[in-house]
Image 1 (spheres, helix red, strand yellow):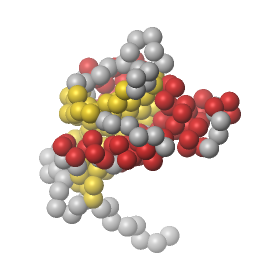
Image 2 (image 1 turned 120 degrees about the horizontal axis):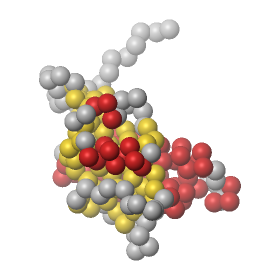
Image 3 (image 1 turned 120 degrees about the vertical axis):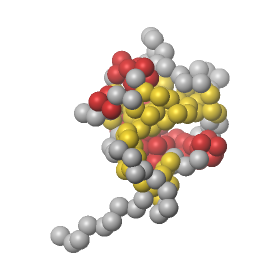
Length: 175
């Protein structure tokens, strides 16, 4: 085995540029244009089928290590459409595992577009996306500080919500 490569320092991009990064990332994932707007935190919708995924983001900024997360809350129909586009399959051939994988990859791509490499800023380490039961995602909403939320909702009520959390109780995100 060769020598390990040094980790490139990374940081969260400025909040005022986040929405402009999410739209092209979503088009890459889904093949569809969506507008993302900053707004109020949006919890899960009881009775609706949604998927929740979080991408842990560890900040190393000279202080004790801080855990943040980029959360994705996505309508089931939207998630299925993303899986169809991602895998190039018709809906009749998409499995629940395909939808789950597509949601995790979507969170990874959307979260990753909010982080940028730079030698002079806060260092960030991105973890692996984790699917959460909706109850645990709701608990994250209750026990974390919401830094910023961006959402996109279609006329048919199909929504995509991306939230950057600053975890107060880090055990919520650590498995």
